Length: 136
Image 1 (cartoon, rainbow, N blue to C red):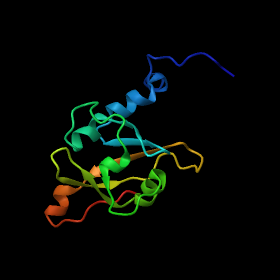
Image 2: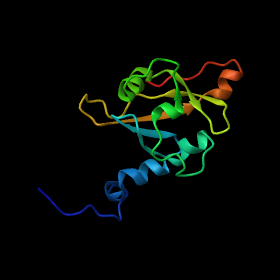
Image 3: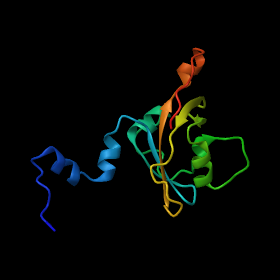
């Protein structure tokens, strides 16, 4: 087995050496990671922008501070898994509600300690009477 480091001068070598958090931070899609305890452990700039917050202001908050379910409290992991493909209400910094479609977690095994989901803001589409897209 070849144990040499990938050649960073190639496109594949660049990707292989890029840390995951750097990649997630560069995505234009809102991304959120939540631990089993319901605490937000990561959100990228696109997520914070969607909710009107400056970069790094939401660190350490609870998923319950962001997602407005109206349901009795359950585990954050259960809540996010059951919300996959649906529209959820998120609390914007100005007090308004942002409606967003939520993806399935990229970590799908039952023993994964983190739920990592993407969002698509559909607030304006819903105001216009259009159909909101659904994640699969």
